Length: 409
View (tube, rainbow, N blue to C red):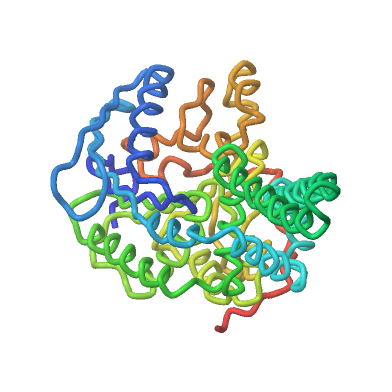
């Protein structure tokens, strides 16, 4: 491992996105735009360039920050194809998902225990259920209205014919309305969120086989970087990508790091770990949380913000899951403090844009504090050095509330 306080000249960054079907170029353009904005605010230099060849998607970063020049290679560890495959359900299949997912969280008591943490992500989980049921109710009543309207013609074409025409018209209206809502889901996000929560709940918190296989590939890519000539390997897990990173890194450390490996760091952002770890079959994730939290081979910093209604803000995922070992070291739980690091004008502009806020961790702050995504990914300090001596947030939640604590599959 690199010695303490040795400036970072070269870094490998692996970004694991959340449940997102979009091509990873979205993250490159977000990094390009927001790094330029942060550089202007903070007075440093940073630039991106395309990476030629290779089997993974990524880009190069060159930065002059804190009086040092740093090179970084950023890779997006892709599972968007798996996400797209899980979202290709018909309307009836999505409503079946709704029933199964609601049952998974309600019958196990997980929903009620999650509500004892933060209300925001629980509301986000309930939103697609409520809105999809509202869509169905509206469509059914519209179909019934069409059926009754056709009854007015029974005196002209006969009662039987009017009933047949009315039933067909009612069905067309009902299906048409449901299809319209699905086509407009880029505005409502009901189908998207339903697929997201259903994917986690499908196996009761266990990873689907295709995801486990992809995680093995991700682990191999990170392992190869640890054998390379860099000063730090930084893994960033955002949203659902955070719990994937926990298991990937736990497996990586269990297998043993190469002798003389660079510093291994883990930055988890806007995590929703309890949505999975509170389910009965999530034994693998619970075991990985407990294991990773006690390892000295890694530095794990956990960043959320109470303003992010889609994350379990400041909830220590190891402790609230109920698997904290006696020698627990990680994660360091800190707040991005949106209301302080964003100006009042900026905060007013984004505070009700919930999905935008969920990505704020990857964006520029016009009143930056000690959390700066671009200093972390392209600055001259390792994650450990940057947050050395940093006290955890005083408002963090550290009370075990999970019912399921088995760590044996």
